Length: 173
Image (tube, rainbow, N blue to C red; front, side):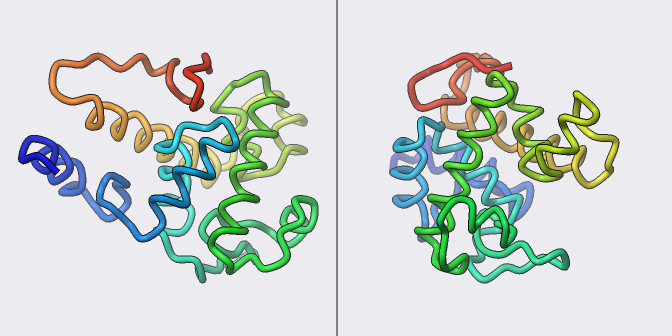
């Protein structure tokens, strides 16, 4: 890595453990899984950073497990047999996020809210549900993704927050 890129990476990771630009042992799998599911790799990496801090054995109090924190019913629906298997979990989480983006007409806020609170809650409110946890989750993933994109672009490069969320440069709201 060049010194300039290393400086940008250090600047990003200096702000806490969730900043995803520092290399992890899952980067190649995250990248290939994201591209296979038409997601930007930094979006999937941001989601993993917030959900599990890259711990494939992370388990929430509500029973979500793995890098992308899949609930048992969601994992079953996505044919993920071992939620602690990093590759299977990433594949399931990426497919789920892609499905939600399609369902909510590429509205990243609603897709992330549904990822966290469930489609039923988003459909019921027709917006991000008024749950503190869900609102914080959406904000954190979006901020991390946006910041990661800015750092990856380098100094002086403008990033359109409504662009570059999918691996094919598709538009999202």
